[in-house]
Amino acid sequence: MKIHSQPSNEAPASSAPPADSSAEVMEIDIYRASTDRSKLMSVIAGTDLSTLQFPSTLDEDLHSVRPYKAGVTLTRGTSALGLDVEDIFRQILAQGFAAHALKASGSIEMGVRMGVRPE
Image (cartoon, rainbow, N blue to C red; front, side, top):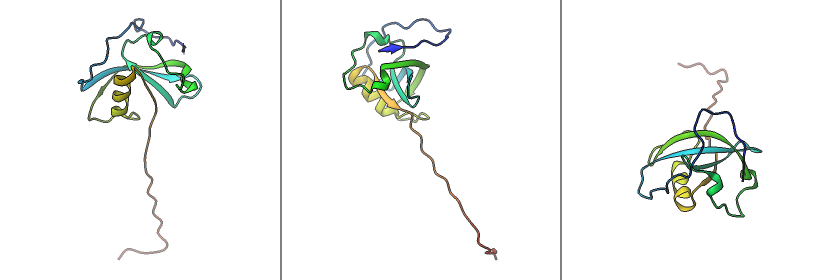
């Protein structure tokens, strides 16, 4: 795991306490892959990534990450722009980190009037 630092006013990361499986609120730090900015890794806020064991199947893009957002609060049962809150909770509780991507959805509606006049 290679972590690229970015200028920050925050204190250095330490080993965070284990996640509480009954927690409804979780504070996380989010890291972004250095090679693919849509791929993210989240951990309990303050976790030192060097203390975690990552599986050999971890996406290669996540082998080199940069800090993206620190101290993000997630609450179960609510939505967070671009994040699957339940999936992040589940992964962190199971393995100490969540490997995920920014998710986005939307729709576009277009209408065309072909010389039809409203009456």
